[in-house]
Image 1 (tube, one colour):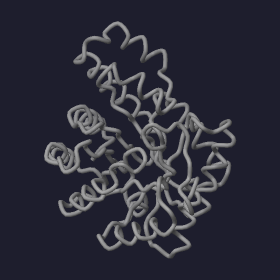
Image 2: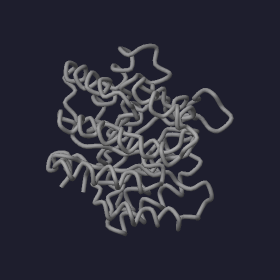
Image 3: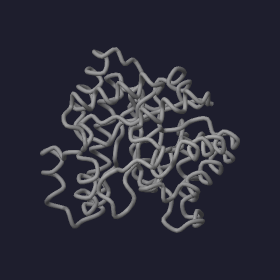
Amino acid sequence: MKIIELFKSQSKVISFELFPPKRDGNLETLFQTVEVLKGLAPSYISITYGAGGSTRDVTYDIAVRLKESGILPLVHFTCVGHSRDEIRQLLHRLQNSGIENLLALRGDPPKGQTTFVPAADGFGYANELVSFIRAEGFDFCLGVAGYPETHLEAKNFEEDLLNLKRKVEAGAQFIVTQLFFDNRDYFNYVKRLNGMNLKVPVQPGIWLLTDYAQIERFQTLSGAKIPKELSDRIEPVKNNKEEIARIGIDYATRQCQELLRNGAPGIHFYVMNKSQSVKVVLENLHSVGLRG
C-alpha cells in the first residue's frame, strides 16, 4: 500500500514517528511500544534515520519487522554519506524487501560536524535525491519534509518555499511537516503552497510535550517557537513531569482539533517512542467525532 493512496481514501491519515534505539539490535522495548501503537490503528508508522545515517541498518530492520506485523512503514531515506551507486544499491535493497514508501531527506550532518557536506558523487539536497529515485525508475511513493516556520538553514521563508517546490516538482507526492505549536504557521504554510499550485497533501507534525527538559533541545533542532499561551502554562510547573504531560495532552488535543476541523488531511505524531500521551489525545479526538 502506498501512502498517497491513504490520503485519497482516508479523510484523516493518522501516523506516528519512531526512532531506532541507540543500541543496535535492542528492539524489544521499542516493539513493546509498537504493539500499543498498533492498537491505535495508525495509517502508517515512520522510522527515522540517525544523524549521518548512523542507524541505517536498524531503521531498515525495523521497517521490515513493522511490515511483517501488519503495519505500513514509511522509511526515512537520506543523502548522507552515500554516493549515487550506494544509494542505488540501498534502494534496490528496500524494494526487494517490499518497502513501498520513503521519506526523502537531505539528512543531518554526522555527529561532530556542524555543516552538511555531500558525499563524493552524492547529493546535497533532497530534491536531487527525489529526482534520482524517479530517474532510476523506482516506483516508491515519496514523501518529503516541510517547514512551516522555515528550515533553519534557509535564508528566508520564500527561499524555503521554493526549495519545497523543487522537491514536489521532482516527484514528491506528499509532505510531512516539522513539528510546530502555533497552528497559524501551518495554515499560512498551506495557503502559500496552494498559491504556488502545489496540490499535494500536507500532513501536520505534532509533538507531544511530556518533559520540560526536552523543550530547549527540540527548539534548537527544529526552530519551533513556543507560543506564550503554552509557555505561561508550563513554566510554573516545569519540575512536575506529570503536570507537564497533562498540559501537553490538553494542548495537543486542542491543536489537533483545530487542524482537523479546518482541512488538515491528518496528523503525524512525533511520539518519541512513547505511547501513553498519544493514546489519550486520540481518545479525546474520538470523543468529539474527529477520529473513527
